[in-house]
Image (tube, rainbow, N blue to C red):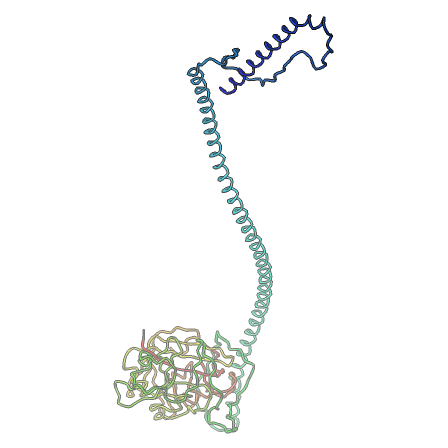
Length: 487
């Protein structure tokens, strides 16, 4: 500002000086002119014109004095400097405030930019998450649609199966009714055959007829379905007839889901054991033959231990499965035992008696029909009395799904062909072809003749029957008697 002021003063002074110099020149020419004109007329100089000056000065706000002197500005430096400094300071302060304002604006704008960047990033993340959720929702919709289609297919299949089950149930009820009718016809025919035989004997004059035991007239609630009606006794591969049965394949699968492998002899050298439950406690979990020795006898017993049924530990007392062993035997055989331990056998009344004396045991009877179905009858306690009491049977309460056909034999002595201890006037062992705890003669005969095919025809009910399961004229495919200590 001070420099601009000095420039204006210099221009004004120069202008004043030039104007005064031109005026003095003109005055001198006027004083000298007449003598020159009179003597000689000089030519007019075209360049001789009036002196004029034009100054272009930018319009500025004049804050200081205008110098009109040719000698320059007056030396008033202190006053000009203070005003200039004040103006400069004011300008600087104003510029500083503007800079601070701009800095604040820049800071605010920077924060906004950062927030905008964060918002954009979050927006991108949100868009990605929304896209992911949309894809998941789309997959879920597709999966539910597929599930609904599968559910519809399953519902159709269930409806079809239900319809088939209802049809089969109706057919089964029809067949059960027909079987009941046929069972009644068989019973009536058996009675009629007995009456005709009696009439024939009286006609030929053979004298008084022997007394025969009454037939089991029970129509069982459980009716095994079979497609054979036979009274043939199965024969072995050499077509050699056994006295009361035949040899067949190994037993069918157990109803409890475990089928023991065929035995190859004694499975372990450990022992002897008290019973098969002690064998199980010793860590042996494979069914097979083991050596036992009871507390009341020094004689070793070779017995079959069943560990694949109801947690194992069962000592098998009797087994029927293929008719390979004749069970129509005398008292001594039933006392000591007979048969093959890995096949059909009877453990022996004396061994059964000594086993039962060691503690409290329960009895399990497993039965199998000719359709492969297996049922059971369990009695809460079991033991025999001594030989002097005829090995009298003592049973507990029944539970199971085979029906109770053994409780009527409870308290009865054992009867064989040569020792008649039953309640019938004749010998039940003679008519039923086996040894058992007969009553008069009873509802079960698991030591009878092994007939093939189930339903059989005989003058007497001498098959392996359980009256509550199949009736007296249905010979079972297999049967087992087993004991184990009470839990």
